Image 1: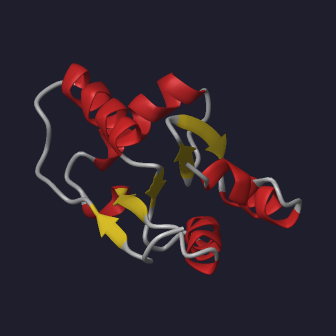
Image 2: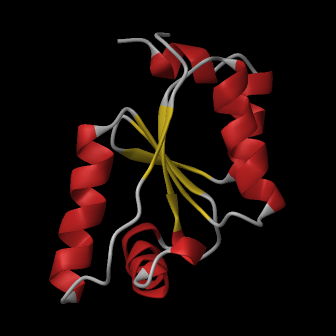
Length: 116
């Protein structure tokens, strides 16, 4: 699965909702695994720990550590239909949250999604 690394993305506030949509789409297109997270959330920690366990590099976007985190979360809600975090994307597809990632791992379905 490659070397284990986590990239945490922090920037200043974006100008418009179109910029936010572009940011989200670019993040999920350019990275195999993206976790939109909040640093204090136990379900976010659960998801991140699963990827660490399988040594899968991931991009983590901590919404509570960004000026535009609320806008990103609102835009994700419009795009995915749910507002909660984490929102985990693998190969550009939203696979759900922390319990979803853990269930994929437990059922043996997660690691095949990460190959390639």
